[in-house]
Amino acid sequence: VGTEEGKIHKCSKAYTGQYLQTYEGSNCMAIYALKWSPFHPRAFLSCSADWTVKLWDHTQSLPIMSFDMGTQVGDICWSTYASTVFAVATAQGKVHVFDLAQNKHRAICDQKVLNVLFHYFELWSCF
Image (cartoon, rainbow, N blue to C red):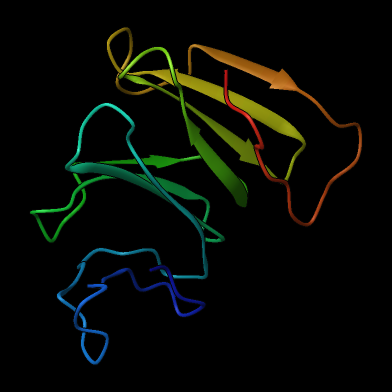
């Protein structure tokens, strides 16, 4: 669960009274999305108003990787066809596509999808 305070908590459906884990190095501002990898049961992504996208292993308390997008990030989405591909939607009206198998530091594709800035954008369907 992502919070407005920028925390990420692992919760249990069986034990609703407490968190199983709180992740360190979480985002500093509101968490807008958390998405589990459809290919790897331990991996998930977070995106935040603090301009970052982070890749996590749910068994570790610190992120594996962090990507500074240079602007507020509204949503993230894993690819349904490739385990290393995900997309990021930013407040600048752009979608950035990453493939960690090709480049671990930069997006392989940037596409402007809106001509105006938006407050919140959701990637409904990814790839």
